[in-house]
Image 1 (cartoon, helix red, strand yellow):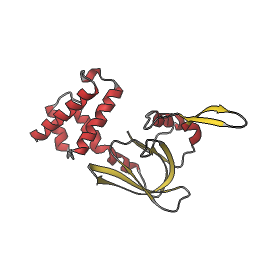
Image 2 (cartoon, helix red, strand yellow; image 1 turned 90 degrees about the vertical axis):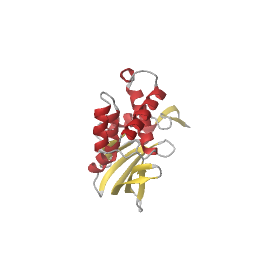
Image 3 (cartoon, helix red, strand yellow; image 1 turned 120 degrees about the horizontal axis):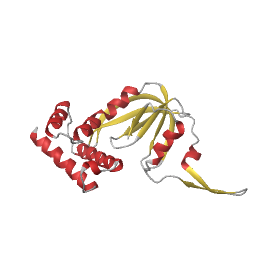
Length: 203
């Protein structure tokens, strides 16, 4: 147990130092988010088995440290999501594709499971049938990815959400994407636009 605690301490300290060389209380919310994501990635790539026993030991050993809360969030991410999902339910899935571009998908969830994948200790696999499609697709979500799932098929003007009109006349309309690859503003803008609590969220 002590070896694992030492590894966790060194990992988190390294991640914090890589983000900013200052005390944790002076970190901005954005910096704290960067630390959490990097720490979780380190846990995943090293296949660290995070148990309730380990979390309790961390709480006792590292009083006042954000480590315990990060570990709790790490192991509960997918568990919280699967508790909210229902088979054969219409859902709107909002996430980034593999190239970092926003995607909004109306679909029917058929099944879901948590399983190891590559170097990751777990991943969320959602089997679903997109609107107007015959075949069932599988979408795999890794622990560091962002995802929102809404109950029902939410009507969203995708073009209006994703693009700004730069120029428009009788002959041509020029549009420009509002977002860069993996732009965090996309998910927050969508939440503000829909103004409905997501069924499940991962970020």
